[in-house]
Image (cartoon, rainbow, N blue to C red; front, top):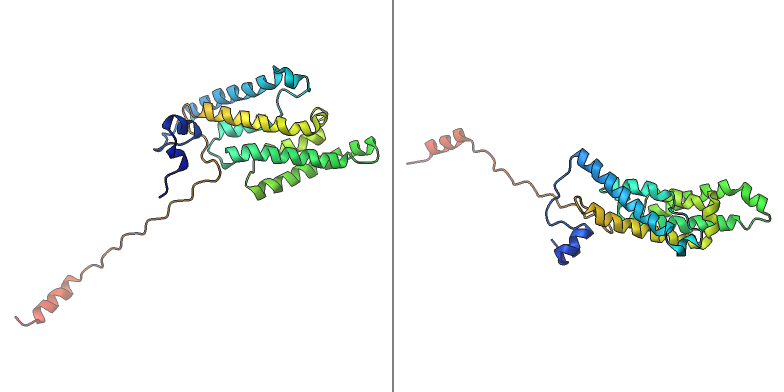
Length: 228
């Protein structure tokens, strides 16, 4: 079997990228709950600190956190083995959804008058999320909280005012949450379960053939008939 790429890195690097040479000892449900609390609190606090206390973002009226990342925290800190919580789904699911949400809402904003656009925001929101679901399915980046990321440009004036700047904000939020998950989860757990795709299942070992039982009575009969 080929050696995993992460195994070729120094142990002090590969550990924080989710590689373990041996099976990880499972935690009790109380330990899982405790670490989910600690890691989610720290991760969300880091993301909010970046946007709330940076003049660069406050001057551009960027919200302290995109609401959908509260749901992402449930996955990347509370259900870390789920395929929906892995880095590929987290980063690209949110980014594709944000891009679709902005594009679809901007198309609707081309209505002849503002009143007409406002009356059809609900349709832009539904269409954005529906398209985002399909795109995530086709690209293998399904991340349920990203459905809200696609919805927000049409439903939130605060997000709509960001316009295209919404995309780098979402990308930075995803990357920072992923880095926090790598740091905090790998203190006592293992994250991610995979980076690009789950490892293929090991081929089943064929059963060892069992020799047919010898009929003792038949062997004795043959021995009796054979000439001495």
